[in-house]
Amino acid sequence: MPGATIIDLAQPNFSPVAPNVSNIHRNALMLGLAIGLGFIVFIRILNPYIYDKETIESLTTVPIIGVIRKFPEEIDEFSSQILAISKPKSIFAESVRAVRTNLNFLASDKKSKVICITSEVAGEGKSFVAVNLASTLSLIDKKVIIIAADLRRSKLHKTFHVPNDMGLSNYLSNQCTVDDVINHSNQSGLDFIVSGPVPPNPSELLHTARLKELIATLSDRYDIIMVDTAPIGLVSDAIPLIKISDINLFVIRSGKSKFYAATIPQRIAQEYKLDNTVIVLNAFAQDLLHSRYYTTKYTGENYGSTYYYYSDYTGYESSGYYVDNIEDKWWQVWKWFKK
Image 1: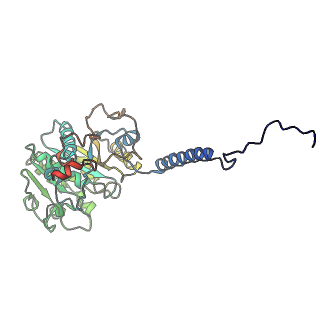
Image 2 (image 1 turned 180 degrees about the horizontal axis):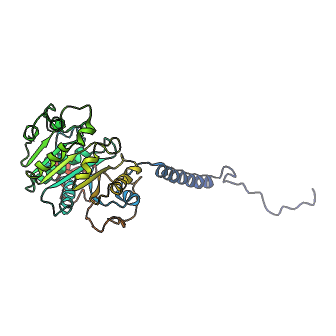
Image 3 (image 1 turned 90 degrees about the horizontal axis):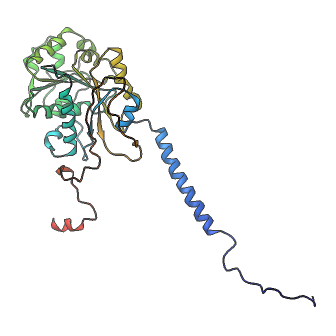
């Protein structure tokens, strides 16, 4: 129009109106964090497995006598290499020795201790724990014998590379004497009895008076009688041995045992009125995704007043004390040239 006046000249907008890049970046960052945290919470809520000692302590009042670290290398199925002996400077061997120390405080009034080792299901490492514990006990001038009392699926004969044609099942069925079934290992002070041929009635054999006679006879000869039993969550074979043992050691495996496994020792202790049941956490490895983040209380409030010292050795791998665990880091290039 003829009378129009220009007040401000039009200016071009050099920044785009849409899309808003800063808002998109901010929303994407927040959404990514929310999805990541939600995924972690989702995994932890749905996780049915035990990973650390704090989880066990929240589920039961039975005390934990120790934490055995996971061996960093691959282990053969039958544990033919006794790692507590062959790798004495590893964190694994040190954690086994810590359990051994606490075991010595239990049933201290007994001249000869009967230690029964069991778990909920197969694959939790009870035989592995039994062999390594027995081996370390023999190193401190203890005369030790391991009994393969799992008459269904024992692996002890494969650990020591001996035949399984004469063992516990033969003795319990009156086919031989005690001396016929005792085997001597290469480790000084360590003997063992294999399970023998699989009988048609394993549970009934373990309920006979012949088993008590065997334990009484071995108590006169050995300081420690380590009994490797069948999983108590699957069969009832371990019940007669649990009743006559001085120490009942229940094995829980990190990342393998479910929450229900931690309640079994207390239920058994209450059912059979036992006060000698303890737990050992096997194959523990630090897991930031599943581990809890609060301090341990070391013992149950309603299950006796004994306190046990144990460590999971977290953060000590590079301390220099555990030679077998020292590894060169990728950034330590100069060490590769020295080799």
